[in-house]
Length: 489
Image 1 (tube, helix red, strand yellow):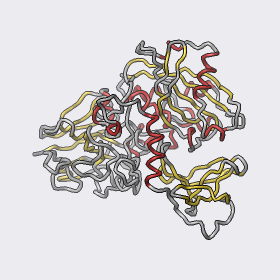
Image 2 (cartoon, helix red, strand yellow; image 1 turned 180 degrees about the vertical axis):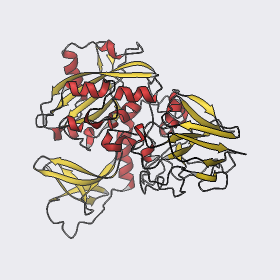
Image 3 (tube, rainbow, N blue to C red; image 1 turned 90 degrees about the vertical axis):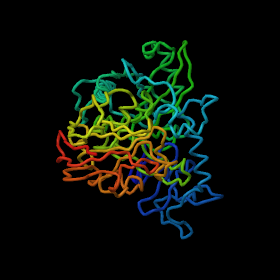
């Protein structure tokens, strides 16, 4: 998934000029506003964005285009009722998950605990994996991006074109400590017969795959486990990312079969209009879901019933909103929590009182403080602003409170409803939980003399049930490529 928090984005219109709108949401549920705060909805009959009004709790088009003066009856910041938002969310959310087993209640798919913190479904997070990536163009939107451009972005060694930090293959090799070698065959472009807007509400995935098979592709190449299942299917479409309907970047299940092989998960993202727009961030984010079954580490606003989103761990993880850093060209690293769940690094315990040193970019290890609860623990990592972390909003020691039985849809922080992985923000402001921002300069611990964290600091290292975890940290060195800190009793 790819979540948007108060971002200004450009949208095309079939019968009008491109418009800039303020967007909040993800592919499950989103809402657009004009820059001056009026809710906007795309009217397919008119072919333009119109001011929204409410009817029976739904947002509907007023049929008055947003380039005109809003009528007095139109109010700012209109929202659909929570029940309608819930229905729309559920209908889309079900597409990203395999059907639950008879003994696994469907609602636990958002808690994630039964699968040790990961999403349910087939994983291919280790070994050699060859994905199938298909370039798609529309009758009205082509791209100057070539197949060779895409192949380089996905597969090259020492890739730095268009300002990208590395290729997708290099990114996952780095994050997995060499455990996952993920490359892609690139095919296409496949020309679709309709204009792009047509496919906002009509998925093209099966048609494109049937066209590829008709060209004589060997599907066995994309089944690393020999199970008759294609590991990874990616669609990259021409033009800017369109944050609407089926063209909003996402990862879902796909029911398709051909020549004894079936699809499993797929992802979709955009190419841009030319090679300058190529960026690895969103492709890596959606691949994290597709290959590793990583959950999103932010609040969809669904499970806790308030329909208010939170930023989760914000820019500090690829699987929150870190994929957008540096316009997606230098996405943040995958947080220690998810790398640990994937089983890529070795665990280094920090339960013994002494001085520890952690290097930035040391993806071969995670530093863990274990508690008496098997599912609840703390992870510590150095997030100095260099390498893949060059564009983080803060620099220093990151401390995460982790519980594989939690959910990042629970931003409340109660014993029964709490985060799966939460960043202990050094300034104690809880800006990420409150969705005030996606990270700021006060989030990480930098150059702290004396006690930085304990059972009675803010933030604290208390367990979710309010008891003392025993973790106390002091004397954190200045943010650098190596950071030292003391664990004490």
